[in-house]
Image (cartoon, rainbow, N blue to C red; front, side, top):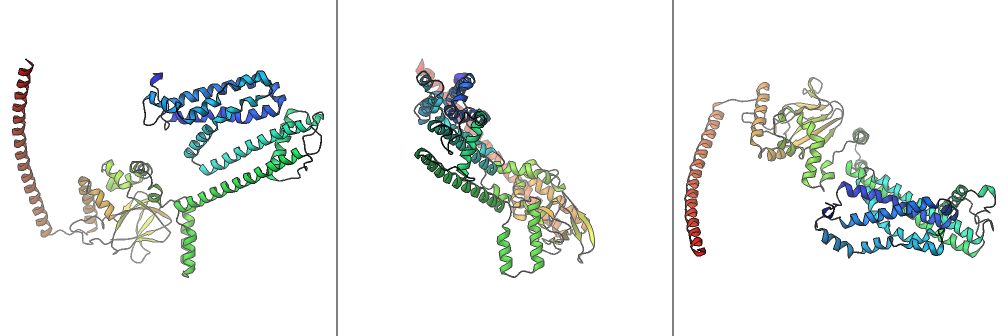
Amino acid sequence: RWKEWLVDPAEQFYYIWLQVMILPIVYNSVIIILRTCFTTIALSYLPVWLTLDYLSDLMYIFDMIITVHTGILVKDLNQLKKRYLHSKDFLRDLASLLPTDLLYFVFGFQTPLVRINRLLRMPRLNEALDRMETRTSYPNTFRISKLMIYIFVLIHWNGCLYFALSSYIGFGSDRWVYPNITDPAFASLRRQYIYCFWFSAQIFTTVGDTPLPKREDEYLFMIADLLIAVLVFASIVGNVGNVITNLRDRDNVFFPNHELVKAYLSSHHISKELRQRIDNWYQHLHINKKIIRENEILQELPLHLRTEIAVSVHLSTLSKVTIFHNCDRSLLEELVLKLTPQVFSPGEYVCKKGDVGHEMYIIKEGKLAVVADDGVTEFAVLSDGNFFGEISIINIKGNKSGNRRTANIRSIGHSDLFSLSKEDLTDVLSEFPAAKRHLKEKGRQILTKMGMLEYNGEVGEGEAATVETKINNLQSNLESLHTKLARLMVELESSNVKMQARVEQLELEVA
């Protein structure tokens, strides 16, 4: 129902309404001064202006109603009304709707400046633009566009005031004011506005040969404009500087700082060949937009949002890995948060036979070769969705290689991999014992094919002893549960007797 209707400022409706409110606010900020200074425009299209005026007033009223019904934690409409009616926002909104149009009957319809109080809604425009900036995918472009719009409105106001001052001094009285409107070349409304806008832009940008003022009024106008021009120039320089800084900071967050690395390499006299390889690696990151610092970028987000982002970005890659095909989705969601992106250059070894294994790798994009010790002979080529290195980080009994790498893996071109450390995999598998058994069984099958799995009696006896110990523990736990259940049954019976006695006592007291 209408009386119970509440608006959450975080929902889509509130955001859309803010965008709608941009229209009447911009209309008033642009048209009021235009009609005030160009009286011919005001009178020639009077029915249109009056219709738009009162339509914008109606939207102002709707905006106040929506503001009354807006709340985040407080859902009581009476409290929301009380809060709004006692706030400064209400006084400002009420002042913006005062019926100053009645002054038309005093000053005439050619003075729409009586509606200047409608500009008190400008904070609403700022709120709408701030919301748009937080939602847009190109905030820096949006900031520059917003600044240019503000400058456009400022030049518009200044141009209108220049025309009004020219009218006050006298059109064509000197070279500085607007030319005589009796001249057909300067008589049209379009020419009047465009000339004034051009003259105002010329003053603010200090570009071009502006006619020198002759009167004190003209000098004062020029002084004020030049001071404003200094502020406009400072705002442009400051905003553009901020945009450049933000772009540089964004690149530094997304990619490693190349300048620092180059300075370090130069100071330590690293060979030209190695520096070229590093430059190629950086170039590959920038050209292909490879981000390898995802965890740092997303660390400020709540855990559930980070999980959703990681799942949407990397779950498809993780699902291609055969050892995770039959695993629960919850396990995969835990694992995607642990994945670390890595990029390898052409000819670079990811791991070498005999190295101690601390992580496993999943190929996201690219091709890698399993090569012999000579580095030339290729046994196999691994591509997207393949994985390797899991044998050295999964503790499998009877593994002859222990935690050592069993093969040489070399990148054929630029390869994008995900690494999963032994510690992270162990932490995740501790919560998913079924997945742990599944991974170990897969690992045993691989080792059996490679002839790297050792079967002996000691292992069998150890496993048998382990199974017997588990059975004994289960029996002991079962006996303990039986004892606890019997105790609970006795306590329940005792509670029933006490409750029945209490009910009988209450019945006697009532009777």
